[in-house]
Length: 165
Image 1: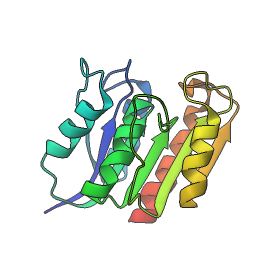
Image 2: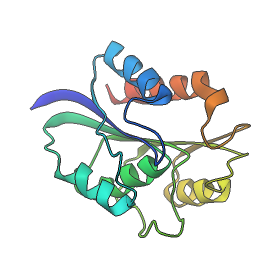
Image 3: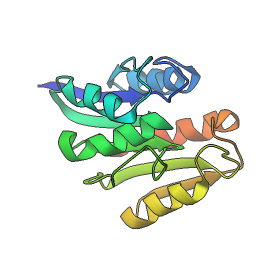
Image 4: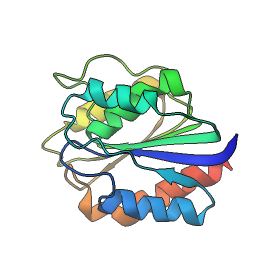
């Protein structure tokens, strides 16, 4: 088994190494974690993305899933099978039409960051997700892409990785 790994899942209209993922990946590597960010470009169906994530081999002793928007949905839905130690979600696309199912077995170390001004995924969806799991939820004065909150997101992500060793 390898050590500690973070697997990122990008949003529907972004790529595997967008601004947020690069920023967080650099932090993870600096903290001694390996990183992976599969390319889901061209897969518009969240179920197809989930299957691609689940099909990838995993052998990390410590696994953190991190997803943004559609990638947040994919990461949350993968928890039941992958059993990650941590889950970090940015504006997760949960409880939307075309995104079926209820994420199960999300780890205790789950953090959700969402913008109050999100015009793609209503903040109420993040509240519902976090409330039903009793996990950390940060609602910020930002939109769906959370572009004005990168420093805050980085601090929360670093804290999560530190807490997992």
